[in-house]
Length: 235
Image (cartoon, rainbow, N blue to C red; front, top):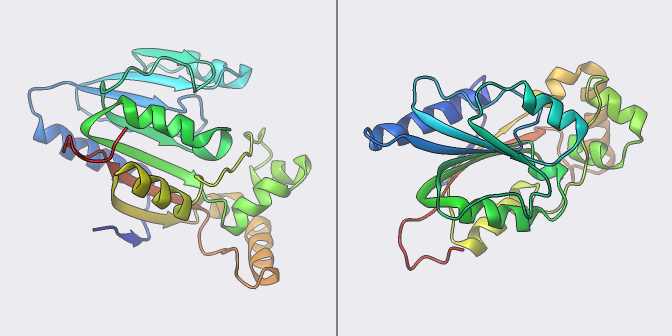
């Protein structure tokens, strides 16, 4: 059953719990983890004492490359066009993709490669800023100086926001690929971190749009499972 509720205080705790539970089901197997979007500034997936081999992939940009080079939790990494970087099929138990979908073009093609890289029964842990929220709309259309305010004056990531970067878009994607959404959560963490001015901008935009875009949350977190049934509609 799909859930939609406010997540725990720290989104990372949710993903850590799901990885831990997955590992407990396979006590004698080291997990293979793909960190898609490994050059983001957000904290990496917390794996704790779970035995894992972690591979990172991301776009090849100077800032991304610099951040990946200082990470010590990656056993291997590949940067480049995410439609062609190495992602062998049915290798990974867990794919972690935080704040990736909204910043890449050809998002569904990349998701297809990510899903193909998952083993049957594997988990896709995905988090993204939702294009259908007030924050997502501002991030898409705002000039660079305003985006710097939204992102607390750091260099803003690329804002592509294809349809997949939304709850409705991800639900449709999962339905068409035969994937099972086991959990959904929403959070206003980005808006809260960005301060009162951004919060007021988001509320004003929601009011002007007559709530066609929402200011109730800014990002969505989803836990998605790839079915083990070989007759499922899955790539």
